[in-house]
Length: 139
Image (cartoon, rainbow, N blue to C red; front, side, top):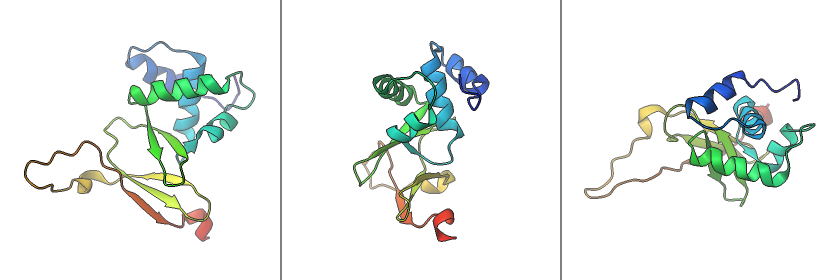
């Protein structure tokens, strides 16, 4: 394993779900956890540099992580799917997309994201993307 990978908290998260712990699951989840923004499949692969994890395995691990609620998928209007590690609560927060660098960041919103829907309506998911310029690009 690469020295940049710190698997202990990641292994604990996988085991707390009763999941089988594999080196690929640990590595991909760790890359997502260490990132301050949502990552494309390619960026995840780059984060696994030096490890023997093939592209198909990364796709399968990402599918499994999202189905288990350990990561979430962000579909973007540029047709690029990004992934980020999920917190301990539901995926109910906004995203910020930088128009300069294309980075997508999770923005915690708290209970203010709750919307009042008309009678009889039931929300399944909420997707909110704020577009602008991130702090790094604005500097």
